[in-house]
Length: 165
Image 1 (cartoon, rainbow, N blue to C red):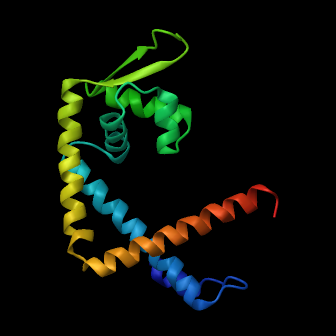
Image 2: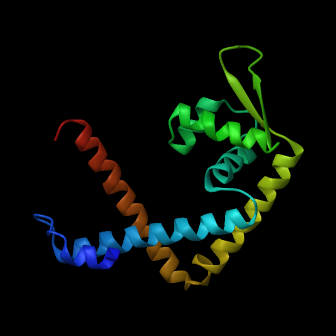
Image 3: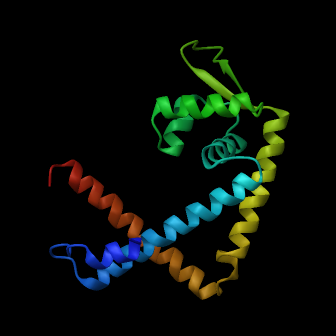
């Protein structure tokens, strides 16, 4: 059974109108397609999504701590440790204890890591040009506005949920 067939046979969500559900499904499907397309492009360039994300963060903030990378990427500290171990094995980064606080580990790009980050930046740029860049300017502005509004609603719902509502 396909995802579409499952969706058609799913029990309706109580109190959710069909248009809201259609919008939710469209966003979910776009997020999936975007993730698959980016993963495929990064894989062709020799990296997976986690590596690409780490290198992108380090490209902008070389020498930050593992904890800061985890916070930026919204992943757990054990997850970032595993991710960084894989990137370190590839030779793209080195980890060093912080000189002032030995409890902290700082992460630095190697020359190879800088080259890979530049390569992945080019891959991402080409993807954005071929997808979003091909949309009319007014559509891009409206999409950005709508997604910003949705992000704010999602953030607000998380605050409400956090208070036990």
